[in-house]
Image (cartoon, rainbow, N blue to C red; front, side, top):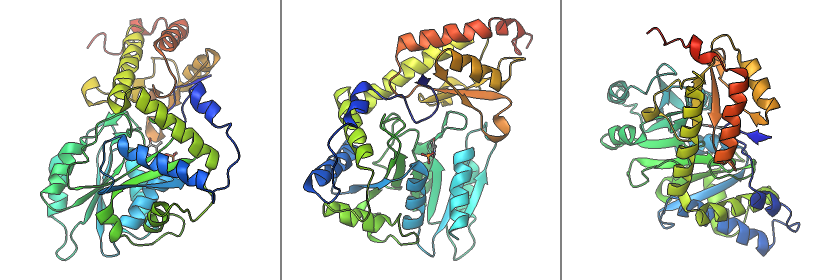
Length: 369
Ligand SMILES: *Cc1c(COP(=O)(O)O)cnc(C)c1O
């Protein structure tokens, strides 16, 4: 079965085999070698200076890394402006509310780009004495496949001295992220999306300066303590050792394959192959290509064919595709091209779709537009 859902991904044989390494006590030097290598390779993925940036590892899924980032880096008196144009933006706001972190939301339609003018206006309209200290945004909003304009949002924040916290769970390792922008303070992501590791490890890359003033709202996700111990070749808890084996191997493979630029190019080629193939069957993308990530694309469900039918037919052909979330589940489905996926796999996928949606083109909702 080939996974075309947005993580976990189909593993390469190399990563899968790396899980079968010796049992390891997490208090032995071999484990700390593993932890050190993973942490430094995560920084290397974006050529980050270890003097300025630190990778904080945790055994958890991506959401925990986001939760750790928010709970540690927003001070008690801080306020977060949350940019929300999908499920994951909404999740950021929910986390802030759960922890009593002061926040306000810029909510847009899930099918639209964040409104930059509104973001600037919200930052400028903060109550006197309660300025926004942080802005939190999803880079690749996996809900729709939209790549939010991180660069433009960061520059609005830079001019106002606002720190940017990014959910890059489904873009880290593939899409460009401008770490040189001084407003960019931290990025949260996980092992099992664009890095092609096994689920169970997540991380926050943050500036050391931000960590120095971090606060502690959560025991397990206390980034400052995690970073301090990891810097000392230590760990407070029992990490998922085998998951770290997988992540190390995935990061080695990533580098050998050409790093971020090569990964992006590979995803782009596969995503375009899917798009062209489905287009020939009358199945169109929900968003224009220019605003879409290379990682995942959302497609209109073919007329008269529900998601359950698409899913079942794809699965019987050996593919797991993904439903739309919340209100979008009746109108769209999603196809990600992360993991050990090849061009011949996509040829087979398109053949599979042709077998159950051969007449979609005639019913194209835009044919008479
Ligand atoms: C997958 C994803 C997450 C959450 O990841 P989990 O590992 O399921 O906790 C968060 N944000 C985005 C944008 C994602 O795509």
